[in-house]
Length: 99
Image (cartoon, rainbow, N blue to C red; front, side, top):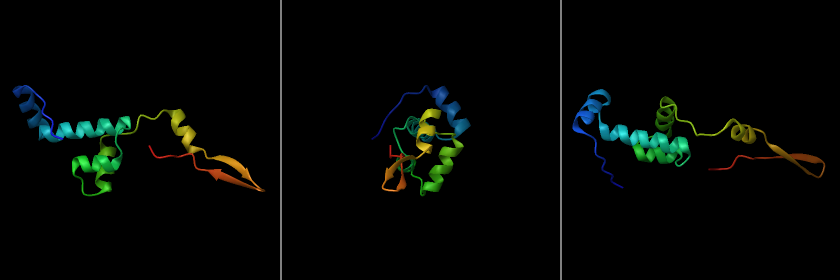
């Protein structure tokens, strides 16, 4: 998808001087925002930005301090496995599920 946005020339020039390419900066901002909201996963961010490896994407997200907007309760709930009884053995059930 191609997308066009209007930015006043003076603002675009100031941004270009400070951050390099405005289109790349906008694309990165969208990728970070989408990742934080849970709308995209790292593989999708990798494709959006043309990264060659998942490690490059992970480093990018870490540098951008991009984390999913999970609450402490969300993280707490997924960090403890629940258990069920099967015969005489207790079996842990994995509560983590893909987004």
